Image (cartoon, rainbow, N blue to C red; front, side):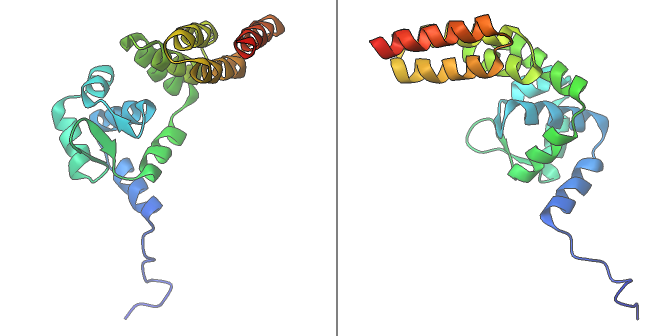
Length: 173
C-alpha cells in the first residue's frame, strides 16, 4: 500500500486540459492555436485553412474532448481550454495568426479586431471606418462602440483627436 504522498492527486479541470493539449501532435495543436485566436465559437473551415491542418486534426481535437461540434461550426468544450491555448501562444505566433485571420476575412469589424489583437496600426483606421459604416447602418450606439475601440488602439494624440471629434459629431446629432 502506498503512502499518502504516493497517491495521485485528483486532476483539476485545468490540469486535465493542459495534459490533453500537451499530448497533441503538431497539426492538431496548430489548429487549436488558430481556433483559440478566432474565438470560443470558431469557423472550422477557416481554422483549418489558416493552420494548414487536415480534417483529421479536427477529429483528434473532438476525440480529445477539447472542441465540440454544435449545430454549425465548432466551439471549445471549456473556456479554460481556450484561455490556456491563448495564454500559451508566443507574442510573435499570436501576432502572425491574427494577421493571417485579418487577411482571410472581408468583415471590416472582424478584420479590425484581429489587427488590434496583432498590435497592427491598421486597426485604428479600420475601427474608424467601422464607426462610419455603423453610424449609417445601425445608429449612434454602434458607431460609438467602434470609436471606443479606435480610441483604445490609437497610437498618438492626432488619432485620439480624430476619435473625439467623431464622437462629438455623433453626440450633436
